[in-house]
Structure formats: C-alpha cells, structure tokens
Image (cartoon, rainbow over all chains, first blue to last red; front, side):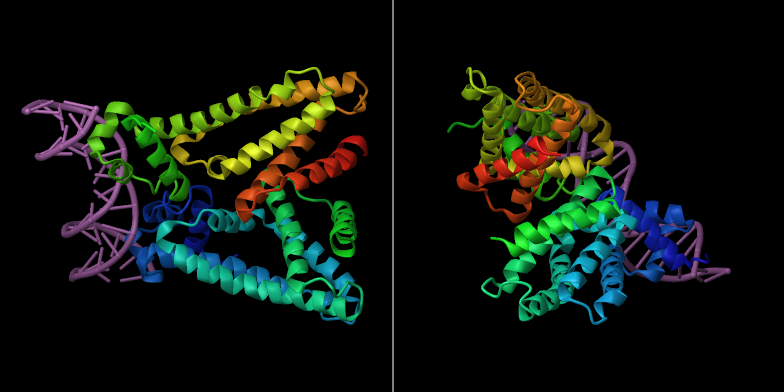
Length: 198
Length: 198
DNA sequence: GTCTATAAGAGGATAGAC
DNA sequence: GTCTATCCTCTTATAGAC
C-alpha cells in the first residue's frame, strides 16, 4: 500500500472535512497528519477550495463508476430484476463506505458559503448521471408493461430516490448496516406499495 | 412587536448559525444585522458558545413546552388516540417552523468540535423529557392491552422516533409540508405495520 | 448599554531558498 | 518537492470612555 503525498493529503483532508467540517478544518492540521508543512500542500492543490472539490468529485466518480461496473445491469435480464440489483448493490456499496456517504450528506444539506455555487453545479452534474441510469431501467419496465405507463417516469424516479436516500440516511444516522435479508424485504415492500400500487 | 436588543441578537444569530453554520458565523455579522457593534454583544452574552447554546436550549424548551401544552393529552381519552394526537401535533408544530428543526438536525448530525460535549449533554437532557412523554403513552397502551406486552417499551419508542424523525427530515430536505390528510394515512400505515404487527 | 480601540491569535496563501 | 519566513486578513474577546 504505497501512498503518494498527494493521496495522503486527500485522505487526511477527507477525514477532517467529514468530522470537523470545511470551515473548521485548516490546512495546517491536514498537513500535520501527513507530516509536511502547510506550504507544501500548495504544490499539489492551489487552494483549500480546490482540495475540497477534488475530494467531493472523487467520491461521486467512484460511486458512479461502481454502478456502471455492475455486471448484471449489462446482461439480458428483466429490467425489474435489474432495478432490484441496482438498489441492492447501491445499499451494499454505501454500507461498505458510510463515511463517504456521510460526507456527501453533510455538504448537500449544509454547503459552505464560499463553495456553494460550485457544489451545486457538481451535484447537478453527478445526479444527472445517476438519474439517467435509473431512468433507463424504469423506461424499460414501462416498455415491457411491468410498470404502468400512465404514471410519469420522473414520478417513479422521485419515489426511487426518496426510498433509497432514506435508507442511506438511516444507516448514517444509526450507524447500523442493513442486512442482506432485510434489503430484499424492504425492496419487495417498496415495489408493491410504491411502484405497483397507487 | 417590540423586540429587545437581546432578542434581536438571538434571532440574527439563529438565522446565521442555521444558514452559514457555527464556525462560519462571526459575531460582527450578527451584530451588523442587529445594528450594534460587536463589543456590545458581550454585554448580553459572555461568549459565542454561550450565545449558541442558549439558542439551542430555547428551541428545545419551546418544543417541549408545546408538547406539554397539548390539551388532548391531559384528557381522559384512549392512549392510542393520544399517541396519534402527539404525532399529529408534533408534525404540525415542525411544519410551522421547519427552520428550528433544521437547526437541531444540523447540530445533531454535525456538532462543532468546541461545543460537542455541551451539546451532547443538552441533547440527552431534552430527549429524555421527550422520551418520557411518549413512554408514558406507550405504557398506557400496553396496560390497556391495545399494544402487545411481549414487546419491549424501548422497542416501541425506537420505532416511534424513527418514524417521526424520518418525516421531519423528509420535510426539511424537500421543504414540503405534510398535509393533514396525509398525516392520518401515514399514521394508520405506521400503526398497523410497525406497532400492531411484527 | 453602546461605543472606540486594541490585544492576541488563528488561518489562507505566497516568496524564495535548498 | 519540501522547507522557512512572512504577509495579510479575519476573528474572538477585553479595557475603558461616554
């Protein structure tokens, strides 16, 4: 596990930004954890903002890459099973790395003033990618008459993200991971109550 | 609407602590909104910490006082109806003043380092009061065989708070208030699925 | 009660040596 | 690449006049 100085900086900064918050984290503390002087950090990142935003982007990019790498989604199976696989894989990914999700939650709910605009743009960019993936699956369900076509796609999307985000927030707040057995029963309940009915 | 300088300070500070956060809020900005100089604030509050904590306490104290003032809870009606009334009143109270609940959420999820211990103590103090109120109602339901006695009271409490907190968080994040009709159907679903069954 | 002035220190960022 | 030294600004908080 060789770790370059740049990687060490990113990791130290991630931990501090997560626990202490953007404003309360200072460059000197980050550098002390890495074992370098504050001025050395500016060789790698031109500002505190740039350091923060690159960490934010990396978390999203890792997550989207993970979703895009799910084998089952590329195979020729029923789209409703794909949707369940997506849900299950996402929840598992989040439980493996709750810290990253807590980081995203923190800065989506309470963005620091001096980077609020950049955060908004980045948030839009990444959630659009995520939306497209789910949207394609929902469309496929509608085409194959698994889901009713009278209902709007954005309506289904909203329900899906409300559902999955709740469980992610629940995991973060309680620090308790959802078991595999639970994932399936949660999905069934959701699918029957919110997608098939009403 | 006469407002003393002290009240003006509290209100300006509340808004800034909520929107910008504790660390990013400075005394000068608070005082500028009030129209006094920074040094004058120290006549009313001995520190930034004290100002913050007094606001935190006031929000909780207002909320607990509201709950304790609900007339129906003192009357001689069935405890399950009282529990519903409590839920309904709490949700209504929160929708009327989402900013206050957002304030609590912010500092429960992400407490600033230099007041984390004091916040924890205060949180424990206030939630204990809240717990006792719900606990009494649940006990009464068990005594009257409305709820099953095999199940632990703390179990019921956990379910109740998980349920109500989710809807509060949902309101804060979406900024959409829950309608009266919805409150009842949500409660029915919760009561049947999580309290009567399983 | 509110002000001016100021102490005391923290934090972001740069210049330039090695 | 990493360091020392330093600049400049912002911030909490206090002293003491009015």
